[in-house]
View (spheres, rainbow, N blue to C red):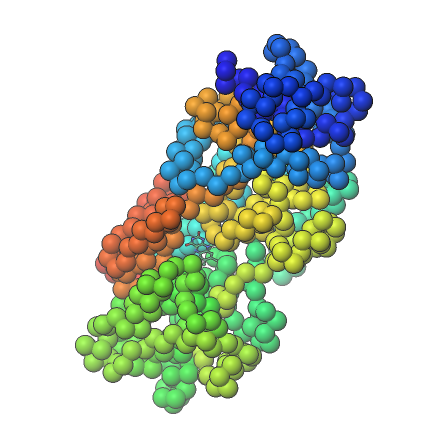
Amino acid sequence: MRQRWSAAALLLVAAAGHCQAFTPAARSTCTCTPASTRAGRSNGLACRALKEPQSEEELRSAIATKNEDLSRMDKDRLQSFAAADEEFLAELLKERSYLSIVTEKAVETVDSLLTAGKGGDANAPATGVKPKVIVLGAGWASHAFLKGIDTDMYDVTVVSPRNFFLMTPMLAASAVGTVEFRSITEPIRNVNLGANYIEATCTAIDSDSQEIVCENVVCEGTSCTIEDFRLPYDHLILAVGATSNTFGIPGVREHCIFMKQVTDADKLRRAIGNCFERANLPTLSDEQKQAVLTFVVVGGGPTGVELTAELRDFIEQDVPRFYPNLVKFVRIKLVEASDRVLMAFDEELQAKALRDLTERSTTLISQGFIKEEMTEVMLNVGVKEITDTTISLSTGETMPYGLCVWAAGNGPLPLVVEAIDQISEQKEKAGWGRGRLVTDDWLRVKGAKGVYAIGDCGVVDQRPLPQTAQVAAQQGSFLARLFSRGYNLNAPVPEKTGGAKALSEQLGLSSDKSGKFAKGFSFMNLGILAYTGGGNALAQVQVDNQRVKGTGAAGFFLWRSVYMSKQVSWRNRILVAIDWTKARLFGRDIVRF
Ligand SMILES: Cc1cc2nc3c(=O)[nH]c(=O)nc-3n(C[C@H](O)[C@H](O)[C@H](O)COP(=O)(O)OP(=O)(O)OC[C@H]3O[C@@H](n4cnc5c(N)ncnc54)[C@H](O)[C@@H]3O)c2cc1C
């Protein structure tokens, strides 16, 4: 009971922050009482608090009045609400200790299982028709959202040009044949059988009419037709990810292979085979063979480093068997514009990564295939231009190459750029969002009612997070919980208006002890991992101010265990385990179709 009243006081203090903006009738309920000061607010805010309600009915009616008034408030007033209620919001958004986040996430996982389908109808229109939720994309963020969303409450449609989820962290391994493409993909229809899936690309968002414009390309034989159509939404979840950033460097788009989709990995796998077959032709000089077998990876982030490591493994473990005479011509160059690789790791691990890539003892030297290390990491070197045969570097050097993979960072998709341009609030924040849609702490796109951005295409205002699968998946689950647990997402702070009480709320684990208001999204860093080749990997876990680190075989064991556990289905787990075993026993598959 005591808890209920202090929660009520909190709630009413929240309402008090905008008392001055209320209608005269509402304002008349504002008084300054000792009880409100007892509720823990000794600042000016408490002095504007409503008197404590005397009964549950009174409490309900106070909440109803507050909601009514909130919904009438214009944007400026909402902003003043946020400013006046800083303390209340800070409670909901405050940084928590690692242990409390771990506990909370664990309880939330149990919650999701227990309360699925019992959320209530906070966002349902008065007609009783299920609200239409459209999810754009079939990646990490949408996969997590689809797993958590209750399709008894919402009419959910996924629109994506790709009808499968892709386990991106294993893309590099699939490009050299360590695992197969089909082992790291999962049909998106499998994720939530209650959701509809439409294979199409969203080309525009009409936020006035709350519709999206889609395009579907159907090809039969040699002719293709394009079908355009529109879909209405009540809630639009943007989870379209990002694209590769070429920074406008000439020749990148035309001559490089990107590392985003299965089709890219497939292209790379063919290109690697192509380089070896070309170099094996009797007409090529030694110099030409070396040029064709120079593999360049641009970008020293996790994608670039892992790809370099996988390439090196492939060349060390499989090439001597198939192309013994070509091993000596192979060169791998990792080009990075800054002075370090793997920025997110600490310096000790960055140095270890460099050693693993370039100084690790290789059987190729001991067996006499090569005299010196074939991998070079070129730091502080930028790419200026790429032609079909050469790469011009910032050092003035021109490097001949056989294939070049561009893994130099993310850029926004045209759909996101257009959305930012159309929404004035987004335009104002464009410098800060840097090509991502800026959201509030509940992942609602600022300035666009009913639109949400999760994963790589969004960024929480003033709380930037890295563009990773971990963040995307946690945001997808978080948003699905808000939807499925009956929070009113139109309220300034999403407020629970129906449905079952979640376990975390019952246990008092939410910031707002009443469990009425949704906490803002908080990211739980499960750690970062990177494969550095030859059975070595780096692992770094941040627990509050402490960093736990692992390298070498221990890191590799952790890396494989995590990748295995993060597979989205048992089918994938079994297929990946078989692929790893197959590659170990029989070597990688180099057949090209
Ligand atoms: C090679 C590689 C390795 C990585 N390794 C790691 C790692 O080890 N750990 C980690 O945490 N992160 C890793 N990442 C990053 C991680 O993959 C991304 O952060 C994550 O995929 C983002 O998820 P998302 O849902 O936002 O976007 P994505 O997973 O990219 O999904 C976007 C979806 O949107 C669809 N789409 C695009 N445009 C439209 C449109 N107009 N209309 C409809 N649908 C559209 C796409 O087809 C796709 O289905 C890696 C990324 C890559 C490329």
